[in-house]
Image (cartoon, rainbow, N blue to C red; front, side, top):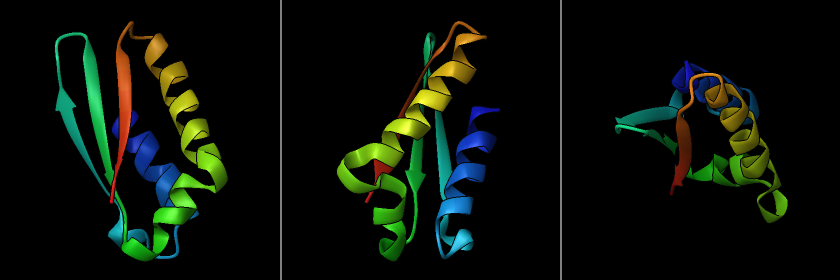
Length: 77
């Protein structure tokens, strides 16, 4: 579910939705989501001073709280 959420948000933000890829690494108590976008779109996903990235992480943590899991979003460049 978290993967779909990050993918949906990222595709809405970028110019090249086909360049969006989310890799999931499952752990016992936490899940790591690695977000990869096109080089031209990296700034659109991070935002000024990281505001958009922080907002995405806030939405993710709210969604993961229901499952008592910790979700970490890493934006790969």
